[in-house]
Image (cartoon, helix red, strand yellow):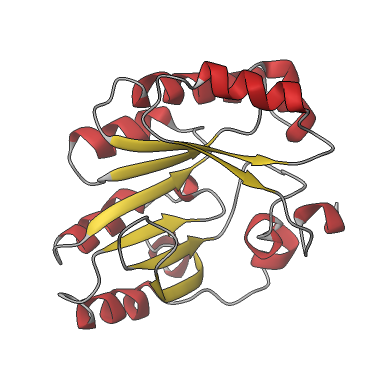
Amino acid sequence: MLNKEMAQMMRIGGFQKQSFIDWDGRMVAVVFTQGCNFRCGYCHNPSLVIPEFYNTAACISEDEVLAALLSRCGWLDGVVISGGEPTLQPCLKQFIQKIKAMGYLVKLDTNGTNPNLLEELIYERLIDYVAMDIKTIPTYERYSQVTPISRCQFSKVLQTMRLLQQNVISYQFRTTIVPTLHSSEDIIELKRQMTKCPCVTLQMYREGDTVACYL
């Protein structure tokens, strides 16, 4: 019974009650979920990505997060759900429904490997903005240089890109530029491919405690 109840709750590894930088122009809270199906070496959230870390760490109670959000209604503009990879959470939809019931806008950060769930969230108007990480030039060979990925996973990444490019929701494509992974030619090609996208962000890699330190 306990395991079933735990499976119905979000695995939350971090909660930031206030942020001005995670959604341009909005003051938000940020929820960080545990678990990811990618292993990007430059990721700065190893505690949310590597099972040996998050399986032995205490989760933040979903009820605690919801209570904090309820107390901030009318002050915060929205909630960003990040990770890890949020779409791995079995009860993500139910969690977002609780947040939307409070009147919040919701932004979802994703690597794009669950297009079916994303489409469901979009068409049920449960999310208002999507930020998708584009790891590199979107070919299977290039993605494989960034993270171990199956061809099935990569096909889902492309499916998510096509879904967002239908402009049914506000979205952003963003790429972390890593000198050892991205050449100047890569940057030019990424910009060329994303010309018609409403919002493309290239952010520079910074040294720190990353997933690569533990692989």
